[in-house]
Length: 540
Image (cartoon, one colour):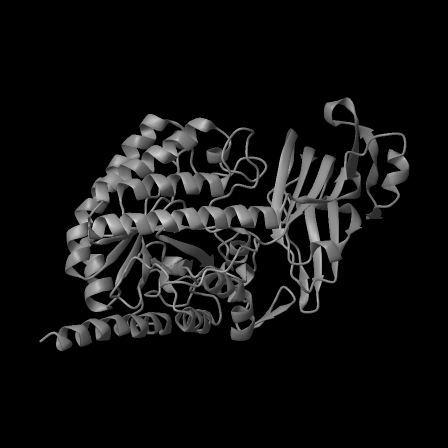
């Protein structure tokens, strides 16, 4: 009887969520076209005069994409490395608070390797706000390549005062062509608030999950330290496939993918007894989906370009759900790490549709475990407001926190200088706890509006970042204030993220005494122990 009542309740919830999604879709509507140009037609030359030219290179129209006029920008070798661009202001009033998609067909010829990853061929926005400027862009564009789509997405702050689109070449030499330039904007979902009943967490009886992401090759002894000595109660285990040696396209061989996945799941199974022994719940994180997570031209995953990868993705989750159904050590399934669906091939599912299909499949097999979903693109905290809740029960929504990247990733991402401090001004914005809380407010708003649980699947600052401990302290304080589960990135993976290593960049071994970052994590993990100790005491 209880099972029948529960199933009926779940059915009613699913119906209500389906209606909710429909309402949100109607409220959101289709993307709004902000700018669209192909540099064609009898007025093309005159239209180009509305663009502002900067630099001493060559700018004009030339026969290009599909034999039609295209914008051509050249920084001649004879003039040396330099910058030549064209720019056009966009109607910022229509863009505030939206997520814009910037897309263009681009061709390049002999564009020399630039000094930084954000130089080279430019497809960029300049966003001006009262607190500073932002420069979202498609990076890593240089060399010689034929016409191909390139794209990026960016969230426009609600207080933006100016938005400018920039095309050209920067700090280099060579020639770039541009065509079919398109800027579209999508507004946040505005579905009906959900207020009834407790939010599903998937860990009833445990107030909070606090832990760390771990290396794919983590050992039972590592888990003894993390869970047994430090007191963590969660690991996020990444099913991650590094580039196969000698086979950079190995991810696309589905037979090889299956063999790899078998090996990783078998290894995870071997760790589960240690996880149970040391009180560690497990997130099964599909870090490498079928087709791999290498970015194709256009900043997209193969998963969103070929149907066979989407079919395999669903098969993988069928397989994992059947394997861990009823396993009390597993907390949940993270469907895909930082999905990148900026452009989706015709006839294929976008990330929301694919995640919905996978979640429905998992829930039919496994009625208990949490299904963890990250918004696309990239699982960023600023993307969640554009992601409609899935019409499936038992979903936990996950975001990652690495902002500002110029601080947290300094010396990791090519082109980012070291010595950037926190608190401090980072790329014209002053970052401190107040700014971090302001940035994460969109996640808290989503949590309360839709009455859902939030899991911070990754957050970190590279160990040599000045102020890394303060950054982590502020972040965790905000997570705890909002009641979010969290896992630090990462424990005994790459030493750059290790809290056991000192802040000196050239350190080659763990510190002789706990670092301030390690002490911080262990202090929070100790609260897990106190909860367990109190529970045990109350039952004696």
